[in-house]
Image: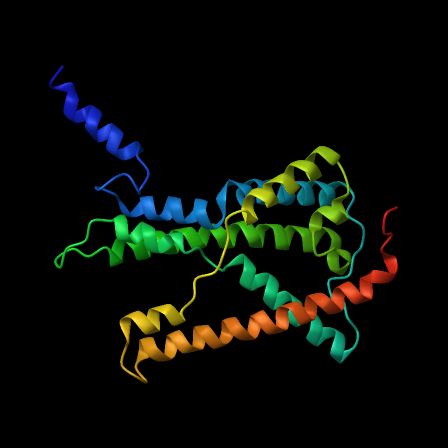
Length: 232
């Protein structure tokens, strides 16, 4: 029985989440970053939406236009603003990544930076695959007539729509931003150095998207308000 104890401990160590294991591997950070950032929700939504779009496009693929939806300069600009907010929300990340790195054993000889970076890269590759698969399949099937939410365009089967919407709820339940300015205050990098410039660029880009995203979304709501049927 004593011979089986090390094996049992190793199996338990491999099963434990990264916050409970002190012998974490790089793929621990990848797994938990993906589940925290995207979660099972976006994975399920992506699979359902992509599969439904491919099936609908293959069975009932009518000639569709794949051009720009708006025909005026102002319309195109506001559509870009709206899309910037959508993209920023999709790839915003999650502050739990900092907690994940803090639980990885780190020594001066073997820091946690390398395994954490590997995990983040794998995580965002998975995130990109999820979002691009839905975007490409939806645009291929419906062209510029596709709604912001591809489920609205699909309309049926209803069980797919309901399941995918529930996945979206799980997805957004725990997503929030990571402020870069806190890193500047705590670490105090040299002024005009690479990290100082990169952090301020990230801050300014984030603030810009925060401003233009709601502007694009508000314009879309105003243009679509005439089709709303309140309390119907």
